Image (cartoon, rainbow, N blue to C red; front, top):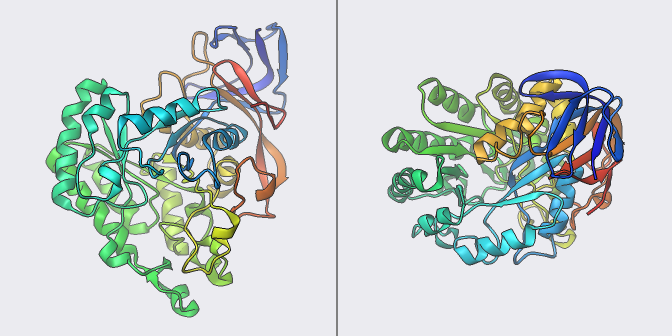
Length: 430
């Protein structure tokens, strides 16, 4: 069956134009132009046709925490948010630190509404004590390693991981990416929100910005020593953004991501004591939010990543200090970026699609220019459609969205994965 996305405005790295997009039965784009014909039409009028989005940072919980999310439900939420690829974090139970668990995640991801890209842990069990079998995982095609949720505290071990990763790039065929959760736990331990004016007012112990910034500084120094590609996850402070900006100006191989909640919400939201606003790293100040937005605008921060972190209702209903950190993000990311950054639509799409695809090593099939022969991993977004956020209405097994009840602008109309529609008119087909 051939499909035509009809009447849309096509935007990709090469620019924008009004055109129909014909998708062949081989899962690739057959033609881009006007007056194209196919077996099935999908209406794209008033919409933008873009390469599918790529999320560098999604917690899909399976295996081990299926009460909060499964790979299938996470992929469905991703497709509804315009994503065609999700990079799955390794903090599962058991940890994705060996070939067997990685293969399990890959197997569970087949046939879902997004391509699932497993990461590997940098250390065994993410305990920060012994290096995981990186070579074995690279041979299995893993290209991103992270202990996400925990920063690797030991600088000597971090150096060893970085040095070893540079030697694995030939085996992988591209640079191995080390993704760091930047947090010095000796400073952050016992803190549940950002340390500052609001933590003092509320009587909630805080985590200082310096906890993040010191690890960013340490790892940039180690990048200079080893040449490893370091990707900084969920940057949240003005100081971290400035440090990364200087590292890029010096030509070091570093990249960075920021989350929608870190460029739209501040620590003032915690005044409600509602654990839905508890996240890791914590929501920061107005100045930090402004710095993250500027970093996304000027290219210091390369990509928007959701840090999609579902939790069950009973977990998020605990007190602020006991509730786990994390928020849903897959279905709201596009809308929040569209309205929250003040950027033109092509710039927003770059941050969601082809830039993260390049970091993840997926540019051969995601984020590619919309032209004949390219893989048909696409989304169609209506930038003017409005909708009201409801965690219960989302595909996730969890409902912990901090944007509950908020009216957002911008909605995904269709998503196409490997040439097959997985979302049509805002409804998931898988």
